[in-house]
Image (cartoon, rainbow over all chains, first blue to last red; front, side, top):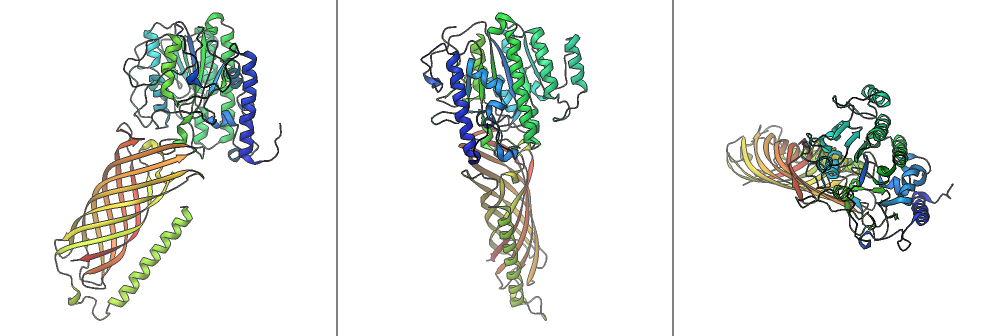
Length: 369
Length: 225
């Protein structure tokens, strides 16, 4: 669809209206609770029930911008007409509309999704996601996490817990080690876990792949996504983290066009995960998929960090049969990355964090579970 | 303030400094008598000085912060030095400096402010203390605290960083139009390693430190009492 040339702001506004309308229509078509509205305030929604055997796939898209997800691509950055959200992330947004919720859009009276600590750097962001606490660490040299959400899930009896990601440094956030969490972040693959057949081929390809757009031990998203999908098909882990990183790598290179392509590939992976879950019966039906970045980007696109407070702002999209379809949600309080771990604990029936001072669960779950 | 306007300001300031120096030098100097006993300062005594100028940053607040110049064009300081001339060539004193940050890349509709506070001690050596033109070099160290507040697209972030100023190296040229007053340009470089950073009021030391520098071109006036 071609828009009259009313400037980038008008185009972005039109995209938001268009996205909200599309999500509202899709949401209404699939709604089981006819009284709820697309703009439902999360604070007024019903108290979540606690499913004891829920499963979660958590997909992180490093440094992806909320603006692209909710308002479409930025024509000033791309030098070409804005691409509507529905064309950038068609699968993800359709799934959020029909089976879940999308949080982080700019809407009057609605709070934001953001980092908790404000360092707006990757490893601290991942530590917030995987511990449920604001990180005091400011850079990617943070210490190895002692006990992560994935470790908790293993101790809580979850049947299969894994993290497969592109960025090798992710391994410092996803597990403290010693619990049996399966970790393959970057080019690494555990020596004691044989990879055979199709998975073996993919792992071997990942070991020799050009790390571009990353560096050193980075494994490009295309390879990581293939390995993750095959692992999901074979192992069906109860808690599965897939960490994508090409978006941030292209962001730091100032390559907005390639960043958008990476965002499209992330969307394709989300769709493929949903398709895969649909083929594995009850286990798939019990799975909630959560998608979030670890930080946003600055106004100039190519950076992020504490000196760029706008890069604190992120988004969160979740879908699954346990959720009330709400489309674009309107949180009454700021949701932070530290709220994700408590939410996953609720979804999986894991014990609450007893240390205090951490995030609080996002109200995503239906009361009928 | 854009980089261009900052450059203009620095150029104007430097021009003012050079013109002032030449003018004062011409008015005060006597080609037959470069050093006049009547203008010879007392070999010891207190000194008070004020300086200002424009400084530009180099390096990062900490490794992952990105270059300071990404968000800060520079700062405009007012520095007060109070000390004592312990010998004919040698000065020792304390200094305190307050500076207003000149933000960089502050998007339209955003609000970007900041300040920099430093204090320290300095030793200076005057090469020609009795001459009309008196070059000097100073070496000091101190403590620096940088505060930056930015509100962009409705998101506010406040970063406060502090740490030891490892070195403050000054080079100056004083013109002495009178026995007790001296005035002239100064070029200084200070190097600080922040060891504590607070983001939105929450302090931490869990980061990989980096050294940053401020290079200042300014002007100083001093009274020898």
